[in-house]
Length: 440
Ligand code: MEV
Image (tube, rainbow, N blue to C red; front, side, top):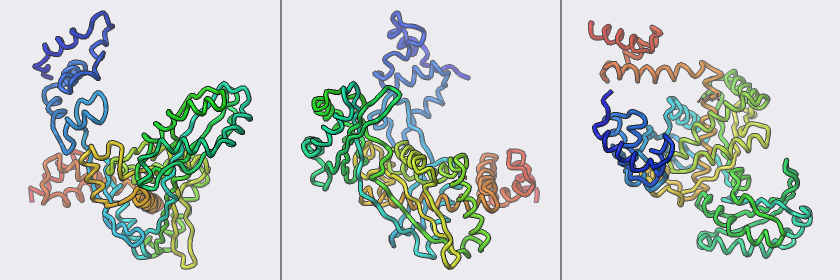
């Protein structure tokens, strides 16, 4: 591998910052460097060549200069496939759903399940409202019970004060809507948590809730004589619940036995936490992909969904067979997502994702995401309980391998057929397919 031409510049940069620091000192002050300086340091440390650095410098829809303003230590941007899943009919409205995900079959599966749901009217959804809950942890209390009583007695005053930290939300109908204090028995003894429920309107709300908790902590300390430790929202947003339901006719699923097979697959997830983990992973394949495409915090979404499932000790989806023998499915989960705020507007891809979806509020976005999660699960269970999921995966993989091996678009379908039927979904299979097709 060629060494970077700018090696001496790198060494100069590193030595200018090494001082008496240990060997890893090239990283000291890394965050203060320009993007190009960081790239040089990284290239030196990890043996990147000029082609690697050129890739880091390649501007995509998210300009490097913008990426630099979104997070720390940026050296480049990272692209993922940006797909759309059509066919989503939610509460009678058509949606084209943007999805960003690297895994094959996910987008096709969601879109297909949504298409099958249309026969019975598509998805019906609900949303509980955009209530996020912020927590303040109190320790070093003389009497935890008395502190809880005091906080609850002063609830009205505390809520009024808390509300002053959400003045920007007033115009959107938001603000503080509740407060509760609870005693907790912890491995470090008794502590108290005081929680503020806030209607964050169309934002995800993390920043504003966290800021308010930090500002409120001194008041809560003064009232109780305790010490505030953590001041942060909970991702288990049980007051921000989205649900979606749909009916799939038995004919669309392949008959009565196919309905029974899907019900058995679902019952397995209800009964066994090991199966449930994978069942939920599949649901989140769809929901996260929409989260990424719309610039939302998919780790927060994941945390909410999995902790909700753990709290219920059940799947977040239920299925049943109706009087006609058709399959009814319903998903219920916390979905803390926004259409404004965060770094959403900074990322042109997220702006485009929001535009494609066209959800006007965080509730609308959450409800479509819930529908996507249900569609994703139905498709996964249908495939798993039927032919398995590998056939679809292998077909996509074969396309990728064939193209890399030089198969033209015109030859692609026949090459893929050959690779799958000869059980050679690899480079050798692609070459054999090429040979066969071209020698004819
Ligand atoms: C793979 O990413 C997702 C599935 O494993 C989900 C499931 O098992 O339900 C297919």
